[in-house]
Image 1 (tube, rainbow, N blue to C red):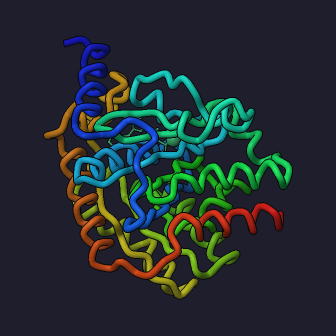
Image 2 (tube, rainbow, N blue to C red):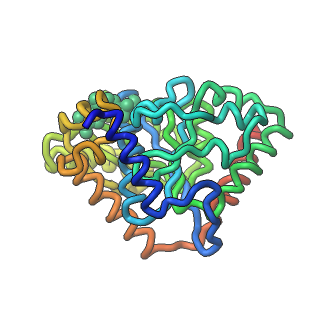
Image 3 (cartoon, protein in one colour):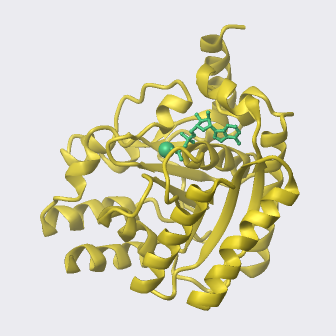
Amino acid sequence: MSDQAERLRHLVESRMQGAPDMPLRPDNERETRVITVTSGKGGVGKSNFTLNFSIALQQLGYRVLIFDADIGLANIDVLMGLSPNYSLYHLLKKEKSIFDIVQIGYGGVRFIAGGSGFTDLLRLSESELNEFAEQVSLLNGHFDYILFDTGAGLSKETMKFILAAHETFVVTTPEPTSLTDGYAIIKMVHQQEEAVQFRLVINRVTDEQEGKATAEKISLVAKRFLDIDIPTLGYVTDDSHVSRAVRRQIPFTAAYPNSDAAREIMSIAERYAGMNRLKRESSSGIKGFLSKMLRLLNNS
Ligand SMILES: Nc1ncnc2c1ncn2[C@@H]1O[C@H](COP(=O)(O)OP(=O)(O)O)[C@@H](O)[C@H]1O
Ligand SMILES: [Mg+2]
């Protein structure tokens, strides 16, 4: 089957698998958990992790939205070989509602493409920003998880998403440069806001041993100098299936579900979802996220 045909089949299947058409029905019982995915250095696998982790969560029965927030380099749509009809741009230009710009991706995962509009978002007036936040808050209860895929490094904008999310995943590889840049992000964020919760994702490891050793390097330094505990979310193997899938523009969990990387992502998602089910801390959901974000934006 050609890749084009495979993409089409996946999309049709995801629609048939009870993935309802937009607008999704809100479920007031469910709390939307907001996660920001970031890294110190670019090219460490953030977008691939975000996309495939989201697909894995969706496969487990959760409703997931990816918000492509990598300013200027948005590429979640490219990783799926999709050309979204609408992006954030149309929302900001008031041509479309938030529900109109939510696109359907692999396995029923929803995504909002960054498009060229995202940089505009950060220059919105206060009233425009309020309107944007109101639109985003309409998503409350429609999703179990919203993941922001940010650019590398700590831009002012990424900082806002980190500060406003429930938790931040820091993706790093075992390479020393990636590691030190990853730690630098954690340190800078921590200096601004001590309450931010981090989790480490160690990508492209040769084996679990290397993953553990890498995670330990960061967590020991963070404990010693910042006095914070940084748990590890998981390790993902350096797997040639990943770049093969990227070239085919099909997420690796869909293209090669039995590859090491796909299996690992699946078990990371299972563990993470299980943890949240158990924890169910009383938290304010997306409304809290938005009011925090508004406050931060207005203060800057
Ligand atoms: N687990 C992995 N194994 C092998 N290659 C990987 C892995 N994760 C990422 N890559 C490679 O790194 C490239 C960049 O990944 P990407 O997710 O776009 O990074 P980022 O979003 O951090 O810039 C991919 O195109 C792929 O070739
Ligand atoms: Mg990326």
